[in-house]
Length: 489
Image 1 (cartoon, one colour):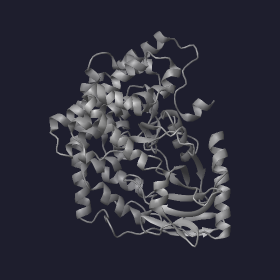
Image 2: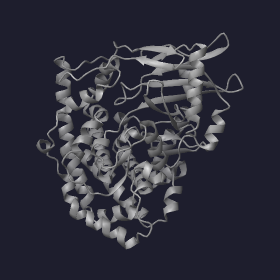
Image 3: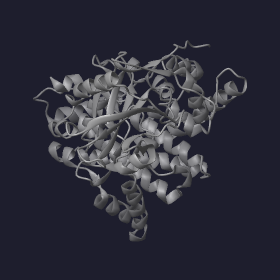
Image 4: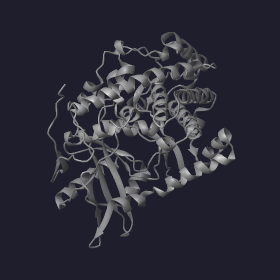
C-alpha cells in the first residue's frame, strides 16, 4: 500500500475514537510529559564533532570548509547545521511517546516560511524536508522550540523571553492539535495558511496595526518569483540564455550534445514522478543549460545542480534545482527505515506534510547512483531575517510555526491520540520549554568546542577560499569527480 511506503503508521480500519484516545493516554506511561524536559549528556555518550565528521565523509570535501564557516557563525547556525547531533541525542537510549508521525526531521524555525502555491497564492508552511522520516511527534516539537530559544537569544533578547518563545511554540502546537482532534480528517487536509488567514492571525494576536507587517512579508515573497531567479542567475549571450559562471557559489557546466541528451533522458524519468499536470507542463520546456549552486548551511557539501529550461517563447525561462538527497539523520533511530531511494523519501514526505506542493516536485537518480529531489527554484520562497525580528514578531512567528507543525503532524499521524497525550493542562509546553533551555546550553557548549576545533586546525574552515570538484561531462550526463574523505578523528 502507498501508506506503508511513506513510512507512517497505518491504523486498523476499525480503530475507534475511544481506542485512539486510549492510545494517547497510554503513551503517557511510556513517556510521562514531565520527562520531556530531561536532558542528560552523559547518557547519550556522543561526540558531536565525530558525528559531524562521519556525516561529512560522503560529502564534497572541497565544500566542507565553507560548511564549517557557516556553522561557526553562532550557536543557532551550528544548530541548523548539526541536525545529526540532535537526532542522535533524541534517538539514542531515550524513551519516546511511541506516537509516530511523518517528521520534518529538522523542524527549526528557519525551515518554515512563505512560498507560492500552484494557484499563485502565497502560503505559509514548512519548506525543507531533507530529513523527513517517520518518528515520534515530540522530536519535531523539541527541535522547533529549541530553535526559537537559540535564535532569539542571538538577537539580544533576554533568556526569559527566549524561553517564553520556546513555550509559546509548544503551547500553540498543543492547542492546534486539540483542535485538529475534533475536525473531520478531510478538513485537516484542505486547510492551508494563506494571506487572509495570516492577516487574521496577526490581527488577533497584536491588533490590526500589525497586519501591515505581514503584508510586507508577503510582498517580499512575491518579489522573489521564478523570474527573479532567472534575472539573478542567468545571462543572454548571442541570443541564447545561459547561467552566469560565478564559481564557487555558482559554477556553470557547459553541456555538449551527448551530455545534454543524457540529461534530457534523466528528465524524462524525473517527469514520471510528477503529477499529471506537472508532467504535462514540464513537457513544454527544453533543457538548455546547467550549473552547480552551493546552498544552505547544513546542506553544504551535498551536490545541488540548477537547470535552465526554455519554453516555446524565447523569454519563457524556468530554473529547476536538483538537490542531492541522502539518508535522513532520523533513519538510524527509526523502526521503519525507508527501503526506497532518498529523493523519493523527501518528495513523498513533503507531499504528505505540506498543504500545497510545487508542481515540479519530483525525484531522480543521477548517473553515478546519487539521488536527488527536484523542485522549482525560488518560487516566492521567503523567510524572515531572524536577527532583525523583535519580540512581537517572534511571538507571531512562534504561533505560526507551532500551528503549522501541528497541522503537518495531524495529516500523517493520529491527531486524536496525540491530543489525548498532550492534554488540556500546560504540562507539555512547560516540559518542552525546560528541555529547550537545557538543550540550548548544550548546543552553546558544542558550538564552542566546534569553534575551538577550527581554531586548532582540527576542522578546516573557510569563508572565501574553497573549491569544487571537477565535473565530468559525458554521454551519461554530469558526474562530479570527488575524492572520498574519511573522518580524521
